[in-house]
Image 1 (tube, one colour):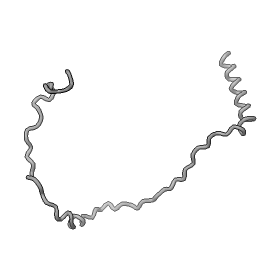
Image 2 (cartoon, helix red, strand yellow; image 1 turned 90 degrees about the horizontal axis):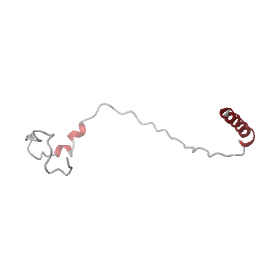
Image 3 (cartoon, helix red, strand yellow; image 1 turned 135 degrees about the vertical axis):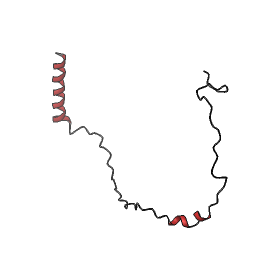
Image 4 (cartoon, one colour; image 1 turned 120 degrees about the vertical axis):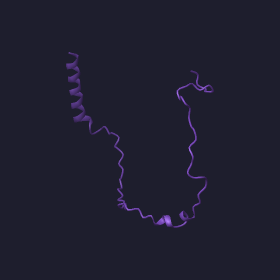
Length: 89
């Protein structure tokens, strides 16, 4: 019975709103934005490498010893606890 009463009240409120109050109640209008679509030119997939033959790329100097030698890194067992760690086990 409660559902039937709620449905009847909702129908009455809907009919009153659409016939009497819809023109008097002003809702906030949504913000209207003008959208400008810009067309970008199509990119050329063929990269011209002629800029590599001009300064400053021609005057680059090699610093350091190449190739780099890889020394021993890491620990034998990375899952061992670290004695100087700030996190308590």
